[in-house]
Length: 400
Ligand SMILES: *Cc1c(COP(=O)(O)O)cnc(C)c1O
Image 1: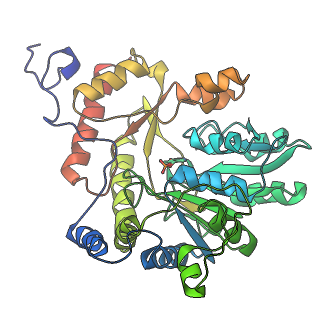
Image 2: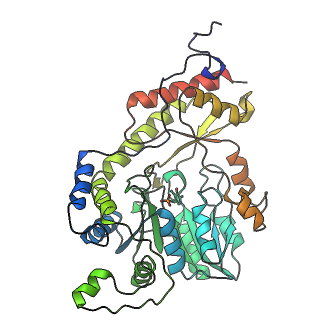
Image 3: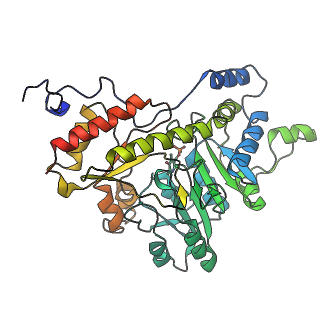
């Protein structure tokens, strides 16, 4: 076989499927977005101005929630939600290991202890029966993560939280625009958290949001993002008063008007972005249907994923290569694959806290076999075809 044979893997000296790296995620910014930001820069309010309330109102309408509170990251949103839920020392919060560390870190910020429940093997979503088995008298809340963009089984989780008097928090950083039994993500839990990092469905640069129908949570969330102060700057100005009170220990988690203007402009395109993500996912689904060494995550009939990630699982028994080899071979073809996620409690910080391997065997086994393929709305069909071509090239080269 000559080295310019198109079947020779790039990792073995062949030519790559494409010449430039296709990242796994990327923002989608147009001239309207740029104009929206520039307009704010020319206005009187760079932060804590009218764009914040406008973004919150539009976002709440979009997801069907009563209240939305903007903060400056998804991580801050999780911290605020854990605070509003009243998590403190001695409390346990059940969550999944198959997530970004922030989903569990927010419990630690509040002095509580994350307890990891296992996931379902085919969806990698929190398994309600495992959650049930981890409930103890110390349990105060559940943080569900809509992994890859598919909502968890919220009816089953709600049954558990109702039975034990727990608060249900949805980490929906992957799932803006998704539905469960025709109900929108944002209406399924006591509080729902979103991120506006550039790889997510819409971006504000950095940013996050908590939505809720509960007015008490909304008040707590608002105070928490502003040092625990009960009145904001504009309200004080309107009252003609210098007086304010810091009632709780809060933070500066405010999202500037500059970012909110970008969020408002991006929000107009959310439906289009989600539709494009689903289109690319459908292209992948049909292209991979007959490859025995790989299977996409299962999608439940009663849910519609908004596909933050397209995750495939390798059937390593049908390959004479490891996941690492497949990963490196795809990278060499200039396909920006990634792995989401290392089980949270495998990180050294969690190890220091006493967590060890073996807690969630289903998640741990899945971790060894998953790869995330590029997926973002600005990808062309040609980009998607490159991904498909590279996956087929690499897996047939490594077929058992
Ligand atoms: C992105 C993400 C976060 C954190 O959001 P940031 O805006 O980056 O702070 C939290 N949880 C999940 C599941 C995420 O994907």
